[in-house]
Image: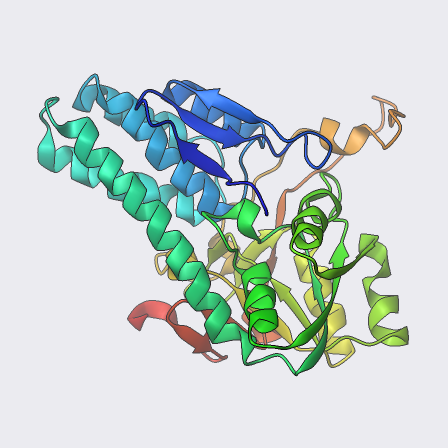
Length: 333
C-alpha cells in the first residue's frame, strides 16, 4: 500500500510530509512545525505534485494561525512564493486566507483552519476518485497506457489523477499494461510512479523519455494519460517538462492523449498557455548525472520544470466534473 503523502500530527503541533526525495530507497517523513519548514519542503520537492503542495500549504497556514491573522497573512505570502506554476497552491492559500480574514480572532482560528485544511484534503481524494470513474470508460478492456512524471497518490491527497484513471480502469475489470517515462531530470516517473504502481500490483515498464516515440511506433499504445499543474481558459495546460513532446508524438501516431486533473487546476483568469508562468529550477538538477558525474560548471544548463501543451493536442480533459473535449472553455465549469 502506498504511504500517505502527508498527514497531520494528532498532537496538533506539526505536519508530516512523506519525503519524496528519498523514494523509493528510503520511506521516511519530514516533520514541519512551522510554515517556514512547509515552504522549504515545497521548494526542495520533499512534497510535490500540484494538489499535494496546495494541501501542504493549507496545513502550513494552520501552523501559522496560532499566532493570529498577521502571521497567517505573512505565511500566505511566503507559501505563495514557493512554486509559481501550480494553480492549486494559490487556490488553497486563497481559500484558507479568506476564511482566516472572516474570523480574524486568534481564539478558535486554528481549529477552524484545521477543519478547512482537512476538508481540502478529503475533497481532493474524493475528486481523484471521481476523475478515475469519469476517465476509465475512455480506456479499452485491454489497454497499453503511457504516463509521464507522477500524477498519482504521491502527488495528491490520495488515489491520484492520471494514475487514478488507471486504478479505476483496473477496478472496473480492465487489463492494463503501464509504461512510465523516467521523467528527467528528477525522475518522478521511474522513482515515484513506477514504485507506486508496482506497490499496487500493476504490470509496469519504465522507459527513457526519448523512447516514447519508438514505443508508439513499434509496440503501440492505446492512450497517454498525464496530469496538469494549471489549465488555461482555452484548454492549454502546463505540466511537467516533456509533456508537450509526448502530446506531439501521440498525435503523430494516432494515440489518444488525455489530461486528468481536478477542477481546482483550471485557472479561468489565464486566457491561454502563453500567460502561464513557467518555473525554472536549479541547474544542479540537470548538472549532476546518475553515478555522481557532473556536467562541467562552465557549460550552461537550462532547466524549465514545466512546458505548455496546446489544447488542440488534447483528446479529452478528464475532471471530477466530467469529460470535456475541444473546443472547450472552462468558465462555466
